Image 1 (tube, rainbow, N blue to C red):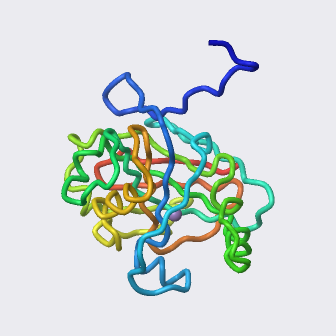
Image 2 (cartoon, rainbow, N blue to C red; image 1 turned 60 degrees about the vertical axis):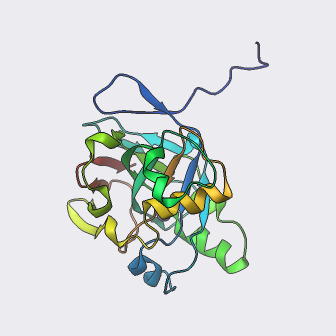
Length: 231
Ligand code: MN
């Protein structure tokens, strides 16, 4: 087959311990999935889960032991960090029940759902899509994937983000409003999940602005940490 120009390369994420990489299909994100974060955004209670997407090529893939470089994006004066547990789907399906959800998971990674908060808030006020606030170029830093078999008790893992060595976000995956299995159940009712899908599961409280020069270190217990510098 020939093309009128060279197709974009396959976007992929390294997998700890093996040479083969994880080819990325789609990036799904869950909104307001920790109660204390929902409150800081002006909402309360357990609302049905809702989702948005980021383009696959918005990933900044950061290998183990390296520091990723993220350009400060255009149009914003309020770039926020959101540390998130990322679930990597290995086996697709639709209408997956929560009880079967873990069979579909290939592994886990630490991710940042970087957000142009001022633009997102403008869109919210106008009832318009969030794309310009959430789905911009290089908006999704991610560290290596740890295969599920090598991860212990992800449902109770501590999750944290430090900026320039200071704590900004610290919580526990057990505080997800919709847990990993429930998220997969809801998501797969709306879309047929495919191998290679990534799910950013939501951020805990403490989201705040970063500026050029800041170094972000995100951790989820037992996963490879994610280190990113804004420039
Ligand atoms: Mn988020």
